[in-house]
Length: 246
Image (tube, rainbow, N blue to C red):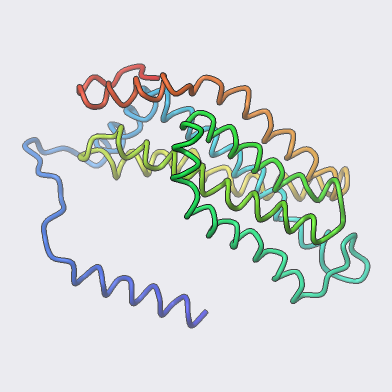
């Protein structure tokens, strides 16, 4: 706890040293309610952003369902995998290593495949991450799946976050980000609760299998996000005509 707290304090200190004015100038005085409604309205009416927020929320639901119960599946002499506490930490580290590798590879992969196919690849990797424990109890294979999943999650974030920043006007960016995260992150506690309930009713392995299927179902929706749809949304943003984009 000491190290993360110290890093947060250091980050705040560095931010306070940054000079300049970053607030978007306003000519019309508004209320907080109006501002929030404007951000939500923008997100809802730009189809590409709305779809990405819902897809991210779906994966976060599945991911939190899995990792709410995965420790019961992995740790202890009576668990399916039978790991000791240090080995469990090492297993989870494989996802972090994958995320680090993904941060270096994401731009190259996006350039090679295009954004639409990169999103498909990210979904497949995410399904592997949440579903691997349903297929094997081998910690090496599960660690490999976590590594791949960590890399593809970063790929998803690079594509979607950069796209959101390009499409959203500067004056709305903070509010749209908040609305987006409401949809994308609001599913996390629901997923954790669902994971516990499903584990109680169907068993731990069933949780991993069900959440892998839910993640793969995202492929049905992501088909709408073609490269042309994404490009059209960006063109609409540049022209200031954000309606039913994408």
